Image 1 (cartoon, rainbow, N blue to C red):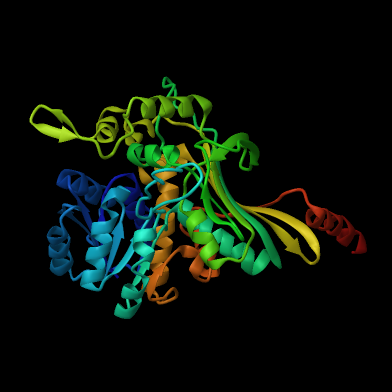
Image 2 (image 1 turned 90 degrees about the vertical axis):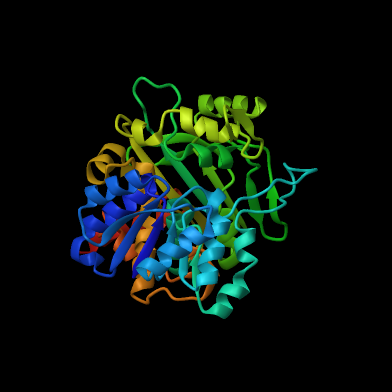
Length: 424
């Protein structure tokens, strides 16, 4: 595979370092072009990776001709989009025009309903991409959308649960929580500032069988979820996220939700930004001779996640909580992956949030390169066989876990563990 990576921020750097650390297991990669608007940044990561397969280049993700030039120059077969979702449409369409494969970590953006934003969806995450399903299929090309950790790994977990753990699924509930602390800072972004504002302030989407997709108030339906890995109980709330738009397209279930552990003080800060119009990604303000949106301004002046990563301590857990029936009994299981920030910083030079995000596309790209995942059209990760993905997670340094929640089925398992040794 000759891969064009567009965007060499935290996720891009993590992807390159994950591949480097895989050594001979990453022989599926012939070349990765590390492209970024900031050529110096691309050169910095290329030097860090120190592998002749990784070549730095300058690119303008808004300019189709800039993308086409690098695809032609390096005979690219696949494009990985690791920039902000505002660039998705251009990169996605350019890949289709060129007839090369495409993968992103977050799908095209939504637009809230003009009259009932907290009741009805309008343009949903990924609508733009799925509308072009037939065009991709007819061209014999594959686009994998929402391939990070959430969405991405979480979707694979949902498909794995359907295949191996349940006879019938009631709910698929993605739950993300952490115990991160940034010493000396009351407010800090662990991920892209631009994207965090987008997903947290947009009306959250929920899916229910018979009702379809609907929206709710921001930060609605708080609940306390007990996370593994030493994290413990965290209050989580509804947040707009791609899994809710992806999972019910493929997996038969009754309800799909996404809830994330956003601290109360962080929620208050976001609401204040919204009240002041500082969350806007459309309104332009003039600064000297240039124009900039308020959100872009915040992304430039707020402490960079790349910098706060150096002092942030704690662990983050991403996973999928599935409920349903197994062998005639109620079952509740949480499939997850836990990452320690300081460990990720030592291995990849990036925080655990972006390192987890990079894992998904790296494994998926290997499966594509080896011909294991091959399905022309536009698809989320839940559309493919989950087994080869899950089998590779530990090899790439991010071992998965399974936690049985209290249920009739878990009690049966506990009985079995007690009785079997006695029989021996």
